[in-house]
Image (cartoon, rainbow, N blue to C red; front, side):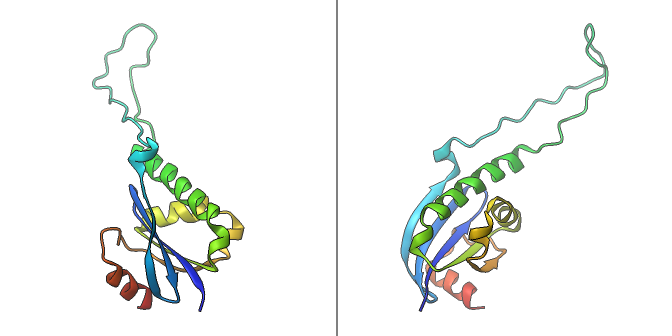
Length: 138
């Protein structure tokens, strides 16, 4: 049987579980984005075409979405936590909503991606341990 680290995450919360085989051994750690002060302020939109002085009369909103920036920064914190506990597990199982899973995957170094046993693109942060075990089996 292999020791596994199971990470269940969404854009604001992450729960780390230790597992032996497919049986969860309990929560290892819980992370919350607000504990890290991750929050980008939304820029106010500029209304109308009137301008003052040398300002341009047309204004385009920035292309970056604040939620995407928050998600990317929190994904890096999750990867940092996975990296810190690297010697304590043989395999890694990632369960996250699709966007967060993509951010986690893109933030991971190659040595960690080789340890990923399974990826499940679902939001199961609020689910019970039994539901998580069932999802891993399916």
